[in-house]
Image 1 (tube, each protein chain N blue to C red):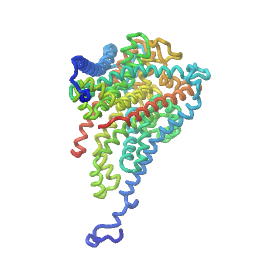
Image 2: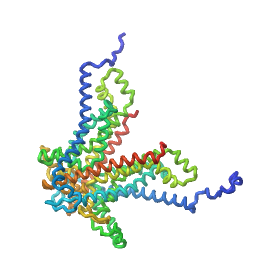
Image 3: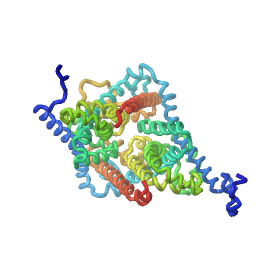
Image 4: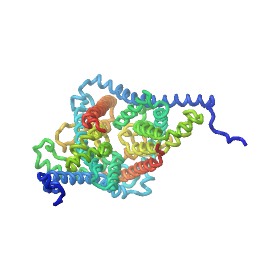
Length: 317
Length: 300
């Protein structure tokens, strides 16, 4: 009787060599990922340098763009920030409301699952399809209401122009829909992570459902909720297609939410394909500004999240 | 609630106060907020229903064999299809997948297996998160400077590189997650029999983690297929069929929708809706495939 042959044996020299080679390969590829990101920033920065040296701060302080000597994109910076703030305000409000609705036992678990899947599906629709939908559904649907508001409350700065077609509000509405899944998913996780003994304690003290939510659950989950909103803001700043299709691509700076506007990403999308050499340089400058703003917001987000976490949870996990 | 034992001992408690009644401002506020939140949650479902309904109604009108076999209609012309755009999207996404998937998975192997605590791994995770927040149009700007300027032409590889940059973080982070899910006893069994770490990776970790990795790949593909902004000035667009030469402007569904959405000709707008329906169908199928695969992942 021979023992069944075991497959266990020490590695051969060749296998050891191959092991070292493969480890080296994965290490190299991990570094390639890092280098790629460095290269992205470096490429955009070097491409923007001639324009920065030529025009200095002019582009970010003026609004005139004639394609020859004046390349101001201050209005686009304004439009980028304003449309994102509007979109995130709307999307954040609805997103947090949906997250609360999904976690605080308002509806049976099966209905929660359906609603959760519907919201996740929103994230799967490509932005260019939202743009098309915005042009043919949102703009015609909101126009009468917007123009009624303008006629009756036109003195209010937010309503002091008419909505003729594309504009900030339709763009912000579609942005809100696009960031809603981000806000809901992250807020939902952090609301669900609030220990149930906190809620039970609040109920035990006689708090109503909403007193519990507003005074106990939301403050405890504040870190995740704010984190989701900042993340959504970062996403909204860089969103291109829905804005290029809905915002009107007009470089004006107005408070009115019915006014057309323009954003940095939309400027790149519209001007780049047919840009002259000088214009490409300035567009690189605009791309660098956009990169800077999004990086700044993401880092500010990380900082706010780290600040709010300890103070509001009071160390309770 | 009218007779409670011991109520006489605590006469200053107003018992009816303990009952829920909408006449109390506190309960009224709570009930109003509940109704309001419910309405907001319902309102959040309207856009999806509206988008899907419009896609089926307006896009479905043009759904036919001709849609997939004909070229996009010129301005003012009737008929036409999106055949070249479907093929172009497949080509660009395939190039992006070929670049991002091997790179993402092998880098994830380093992160999960060879140096999970190393400084390199921490840096890779950090830059992957930075990449997740990179506006998609900037990926296009990068591919423009890196490929279009160098080769002197708009091309499918330029578009593929831009999309690969957007797919990379998803593939990398989900693959790392999936590799880490492989039960420790399976690692130990392989190592205990004298396998090298490389054999462990190829014969145990990657096969076991395959469903999870494929989920990440499918999600990344779904996202890439719908991206428009990075293609606008990398792959550009073309009204003709693809040729053998990839180094020329390549059409895609996403750019076709963008171009035709602002067209004054109803026929082109109809084609845009039909293309949207096809694009959403592709994206949803990729998403659902990813979800199905995710259920087959082995857990610790």
